[in-house]
Image (cartoon, rainbow, N blue to C red; front, side, top):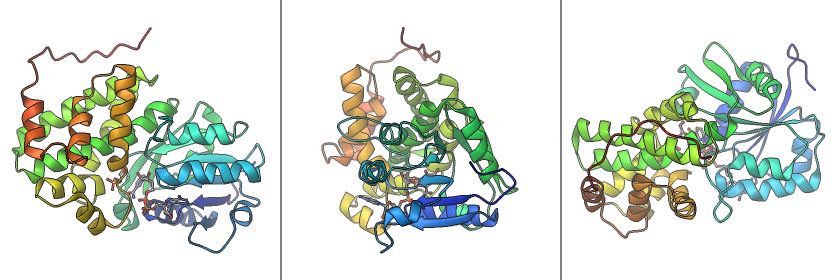
Length: 317
Ligand SMILES: NC(=O)C1=CN([C@@H]2O[C@H](COP(=O)(O)OP(=O)(O)OC[C@H]3O[C@@H](n4cnc5c(N)ncnc54)[C@H](O)[C@@H]3O)[C@@H](O)[C@H]2O)C=CC1
Ligand SMILES: O=C(CO)COP(=O)(O)O
């Protein structure tokens, strides 16, 4: 195990926007960083050799593949594994950290998630994030590793809630992008985001997360960042669709991962399986599948039966 006073040897899996940004933050803290990508010629085995910490900044589709590769290679049980992906595995509905836990059951797993638009952090702007784990000591090690004067890291003991906040807000950012792309105004956007937070919390709590986690940086915080910035790829997807662009064209223009596009239908299937009410995610999935025009989806949401504004979300017995 690395000592807090020494530079740690960190391997980052994934050399996309987020992997490269984490590399920048870690190098500023004098850590020894190796970045692995499927596009590099360096084998995974060589990249993870002697790593104290392995950080997965892969997009969702890469996680099960690379987790299986790491399982086959084997890593020492003291190596900390950090999952920074925001998505859900299609079919099994597992979160990225659950996939890492299955592949590496003896390693401490830490979730990293928060309002972290990579481009802003790369530009040197300040930000905060959350590291969450059932193993609090492991979360604290990652906090020490990453915390700096420009990147404030909080620990949290609810990894599932922390991870689901980052995952679910991607779908909401698409919805808010649609709202802005249709010029529906500030009242509509405020209503959408507020009801979306209730929807995210309801889903998260049904799946076993703590409700309070969704009011924190990894929930509300990340939702605000992603829903209010044109730097967000998910927001840009919704905005582009509302402006009449085809999904393929918007994604080609963005040129990197917009996880909400893949997560929306997976989430709707999961909500259907578990009987969870998820009207906003359902509307987003319908728009993405081309089953409903953006304006029609808004109409559908607005014409739902009037109801009480229930804000207290009960954990299932
Ligand atoms: N960009 C951002 O601002 C932030 C992104 N995230 C999350 O981090 C994850 C990665 O995002 P970005 O780096 O922005 O995406 P990106 O599209 O820039 O990079 C994705 C990375 O995953 C790798 N990858 C994809 N499929 C793979 C496969 N089958 N096998 C091996 N590697 C594979 C790609 O080669 C690439 O290195 C996403 O889940 C995203 O939601 C989280 C916080 C901030
Ligand atoms: O997760 C993010 C910010 O916290 C990045 O958002 P996008 O994936 O929508 O760009």
